[in-house]
Image (cartoon, rainbow, N blue to C red):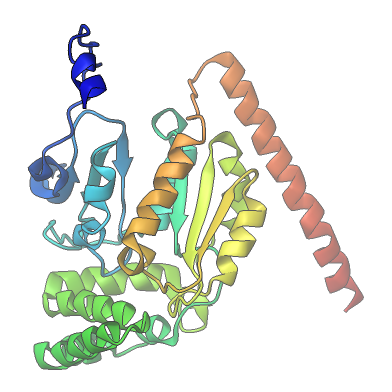
Length: 321
C-alpha cells in the first residue's frame, strides 16, 4: 500500500495518444446512389479514409451480400459494394451484364494502374462445370418457368427451409436462403430479363461457355488470392485449385465448411483472410511508361508462346485420330 502511494508522487509519464476508433455508425454500410451514363447505380459503402476495397457480387446477387463483412473491414478500408446494373436497386436497362469474378479479372488486367490486388471468391468463368440449376435456366422456355419459380410463396418456403437448416448448424441452409433471396429478385421483369441475358451469354445447357483460364497468366502483374468454399453447390471447388495453379504467385484459401457464399457462412474468418492478404502483400504499382509497356509486351508474348505449346499436342492428337 505504501509503495503504491509512493509511486503516485513521481512525475506522471506522458502516455502516447491512442488512435481514435471509428464510430460504430461509420462502420455500418449505408446505401448511396450515383448516375452513371444516365443509369442509376446503387451501392453500399462503409468506412472512410482508408484504401478502397471493392466488393463485387455475382449473378442474382446484390450489394447486401457483403453486409456481414463490411463492418469488419471498414475500420481499415473504405469499402464499396455496388449493385451491378440489372441487380438490386440499380437500373435494369436492356442488355447483357458481366458477373462479379469476370468484372474483377477483366478490370485487373485492362486497367492495372487502378488495381493493386485481386481476390476471386467462388468465381465463374474458371471451368465448364456449373450447377444443374443454372444450366436449366438457359433452356428454351425459361422465360415462362422463372416467374413461377420466383413466386413469393415458393421462395418464402425456400428461405424458411434454408433458415431452419442454418439454425440446425447446416451450412447448406445459408446457400439455400441466399439463393431464394436472389431468385426472389426475378419477380421484377427487368431483373428477370437481365438474368436470362447474362446467364445465356456465359452458360449453356452443357456448362459454362465463357472461360478466363487462358488469361490467368496476366495476374502475374499483381498479388492475387483465390478464396472458395469447399462445399460450394453451384461451382465446384476444384475450379479454385486449377485457377490457383494458373495464377503465378497466387494464394489459395479454402473454407472447408462453407458453400458458395463464404462471406455469409464465416464472415469473421472471411474478413481476416482478406485483411491478412492485403497487409502481407505489397500493392502493385503500374504506370504506362516504357518500362511497364515492355513488361506487358513480354508477358503477352510469353502467354502466346504458352498457348502455342499447348495447341501443338492437341493438333498432333487430332491428326493421329
